[in-house]
Amino acid sequence: MCKRVFLTAILLCAAVLLLFMPPAAYAQAPILTITSPAGPDTYASGDPMTVGWTSDQALSTGEFGVWVRSSSDTWYIGQVVPATGGTSFSTPITLSLPTGSGYQVIVAYRPTSGSGTWGSFVSTWWSFTVTATMPAITFGQTLAGSITTPAEMDTYTFAANAGDRVLVRMSFSSGDFWMGVRIYGPDGTELAEQYSPVTAEIADCQLPTTGTYSIVAYDGFEGTGTGEYYLYLQRL
Image (cartoon, rainbow, N blue to C red; front, side):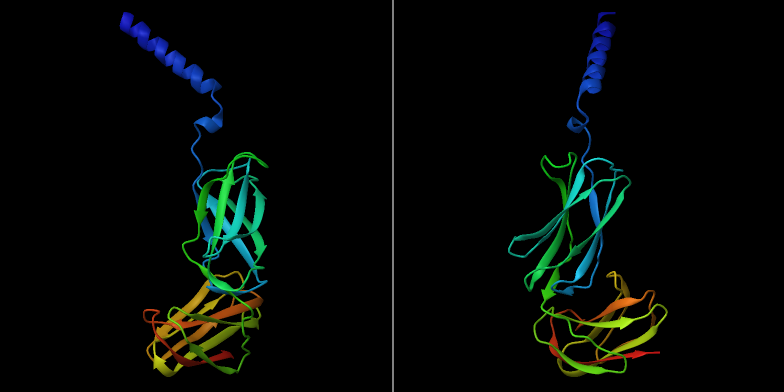
């Protein structure tokens, strides 16, 4: 009898503590996942980027912080996004950054808007490079390019309309590397990829929206080779 009364008293005390305990003291911190962009790996300074992320919990209070961090751990941009409900969030940012490589996107959350410590930090697993400009390529044009350092990725842009079908061909000129080529949409979504020792050709890629697309040329074997190539673009 005494044991039963004692256990009942303990359970009642625990229930009272949980009832009056502030939610933040026992609520689990949300787990964040960055969903976009997933590429391309090179942007020009001043380019737009839409950062998207999800939470494993629906969040209608508090706010998110979005930053870009350099390889030397310098933090740039810094943007606050309110948690307005749901589990998916996004914000546009402008990459007004010094040229360089190794940039990463970082998103964090705090439950109180305007104050408190940031938590639930998450960063992209991929990094990106910011260049002064990205060369443009037009339909029917062949450009000569070169991979001069291991892991280099060369980005070219072209304008197209929704429904356009394009062919992209990367051909070997000299050096010791494989041809590798990708097409990315205006929102950074990868649309097509091909790689080959001599000629990598995306024979027919239909473009979903009107806007500026990116072609990325790279070493398609292990990313360690260098050499020269030709890049050709045509509307079908």
